[in-house]
Length: 195
Image (cartoon, rainbow, N blue to C red; front, side):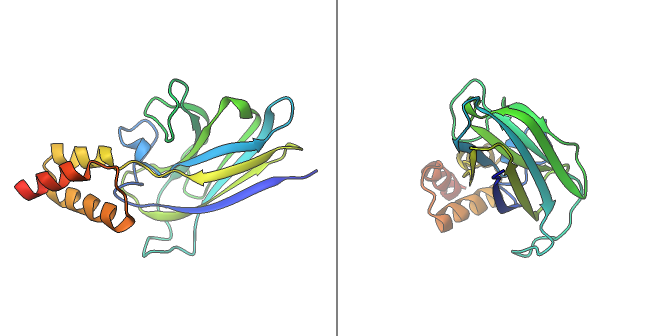
């Protein structure tokens, strides 16, 4: 039996990707990965196993080990969006643990997506690298896992509303360094200059 497998490395990193636990206001600020199925069997149902561990090799000066973490498989039921929305439906999840996170879905309707994987830490603002492995055991199925670029516009507007100049400066510098252009940068720069 042919098995489709994808492995990605990522990290929880402030300010855009360390949003804390499921159910918190900042949960959608965690890393996000779009899970799609370019090939599916006629039934449309696939068996999926998702595992996540901390990346012991670390990287970028991040801690190699943190507290508890979990992974969630979600989808946006009401709106077509290219990132996880606050009202996303949790399709599968595991408990928060400090060793590994494992989710097994016996029958996932591949045609009901797109789905997203959202790794989160129990505590907000924890920074550490992780590894996610997705295995699809269904013959004839294939998977793609793509990192989603989390929108910074909402974070820029929150920094402006909270008069948090250090955070605003950090976000705008990051946007400039990464060449991000659709983030309310003009509004943020104008506000920063006035202050």
